[in-house]
Length: 143
Image 1 (cartoon, rainbow, N blue to C red):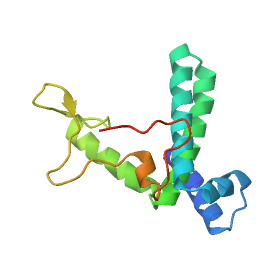
Image 2 (cartoon, one colour):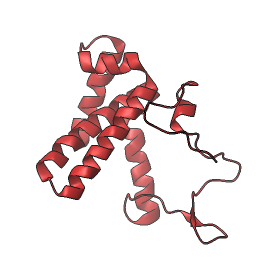
Image 3 (tube, helix red, strand yellow):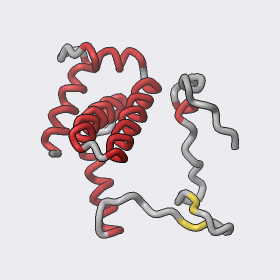
């Protein structure tokens, strides 16, 4: 599996450099980071919905689409597959498996994100997209 991801990453990176013509991938790079992130979100929702209804074949197809779009975003951000594998190994050492990191309980007893002291919470998607307005059909969250 990781070899497939590495090959896909190399092909997407080559497309970004202009040495591998792929119209779909070139279009994503032209549209920019916010559009790439939106595609990742759309594909993740499709995977989730197909999983809920139990459509195995559709879940497999949509998972492949999700991985493709995720790799495009990785390339845009300069993330190598090995960066992700290293994080998974780190989590495996801490938790026994590469699962989602736990959250700490806040004083109110609700889950709170686990941040290091002095590290700000992640900005919203549209705030990190080079000052872009909210994506279509996505309401702006209020604090």
